Length: 350
Ligand SMILES: *[C@@H]1O[C@H](CO)[C@@H](O)[C@H](O)[C@H]1NC(C)=O
Ligand SMILES: *[C@@H]1O[C@H](CO)[C@@H](O)[C@H](O)[C@H]1NC(C)=O
Image (cartoon, protein in one colour):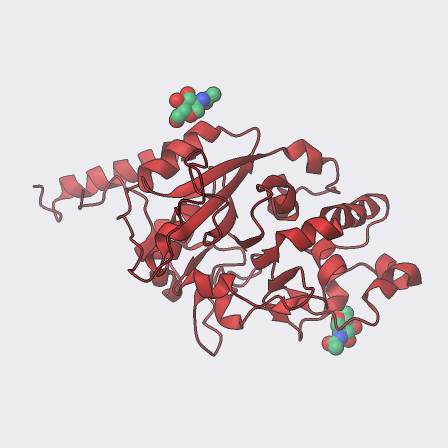
């Protein structure tokens, strides 16, 4: 055992750190998470009604479906999110994850990485054909917000198996500290397609361009609706209603219009707002303690919003793993760190 205070150790540490910076993302090594078990009262996902060919019991009525995007850049966040979901779930063995990854990414590598950290996880990796959406993304500046995978959430109804009727969509920069079953059970009422955390004080004016507001046939879309901003990083979606209403097509129509005349600022959110704002069911704000990524302009740390916490969301520019690696964490990044599965080259435990 080396003396952690010796100059040699520090030198080693520094060289390992610079090595890890120089190393490509894909060479990150992740630890194996513990296995999580259903509590005795949980319904069994594998009843006799389902044949064993359905290896993940994906059509079971008791399954809770969670969808996330997955790529090599954000995989550290995704693994932390998965760990947090399992750890706080009463029936973790009934959760089925649907990871949507770019068709051009190495899905074998993603699957291997997932299985290594979660050998017992019920999951599927679904390939998302970026080309289907990249032609629709309007662009002058291609920002991170315009990554095609960001739009995958609009295609879940097509991507997921038809027997999946309800899904919880989650961003990769969040952790849950409560049972996802409660979030998944958010009432959608008689006819709502989705539920999401709504923010009715947000100023809608800024999400759309003057072109949009000055064109009555467009701006009327939002008239007569109590349209509130909502966060698309935490959504509960009724996929059958989505399919019945062909909402993917409706979102695509707005994207096509955006290509012809710029009606909103860049991003995947505005078409969602145009189609759904005012017609969604609210998700309690405890499920989106948002903005922990910090102030987008000055990089300032943010505090929690008043009220209870079931989900911490590092929305915004900063990500906790980046700040932790840089030894410049925000205070609340300490709440993300316990879910980090990265096997750091200098970690002292094995
Ligand atoms: C994809 O990932 C697997 C597993 O990590 C690896 O063996 C394979 O070489 C990769 N394929 C490509 C084309 O990079
Ligand atoms: C919303 O923002 C616009 C433009 O930034 C501004 O003119 C308007 O007064 C704001 N409305 C409210 C209610 O704050």
